[in-house]
Length: 117
Length: 163
Image 1 (cartoon, helix red, strand yellow):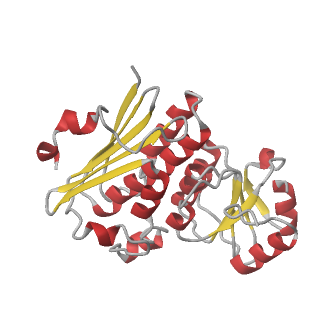
Image 2: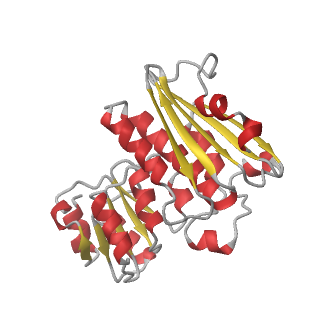
């Protein structure tokens, strides 16, 4: 699935990284606990989180993920946007909550990046 | 001769937390090394760096790399770990609310390091500090020991002088 599909499915607003919407997303991961995401590599994955701190971006970069979606309509502050731009990490915001967001993406075929199932 | 890098880690500085690990990741990427190793090194370096920021006193993270693999060492002058076996248990945490609000303190830091490194050793002394060494091998895990490796952080600073 492309990031542009994710944007459409989640009716999301692109906060930064408009030029990265063509990127391929291999699977999804969702958590507000960053260390739960760093159990192993999430190369090519999409991060869904309600955590609007710079560590959400850091974790996505360190974990090899390709984009971050903030759920529940949360908007990151300028420091987070600037860090994401520095790492060329597109960030989106959706009004759906975490459960709805995961369900919508899973239903459209985006499986877990961790288990690939 | 490979590359050796060192970064200072400031206790409780959550704004700059992770910058050392990011630099290590970028350095390894620029060398075009095995992607799996870069990924595992990044995760372990970041978790270890965040541990120092959250729990330790000020500290240092170092990376050395040669043709056989990558070694990450982390040393801090913090309070030390009360019970290392407990700290290695998934889900166990002593983190406060402030840390958990930032998405950390899930009790997965050290278990993630163990899971993603090929060799891991931890030494901790109460009221003195903690030292971690992690090794990552190229070519699918040539061995489970760091025998004969140069531990730069340990050798340059000596445990008792720093922690």
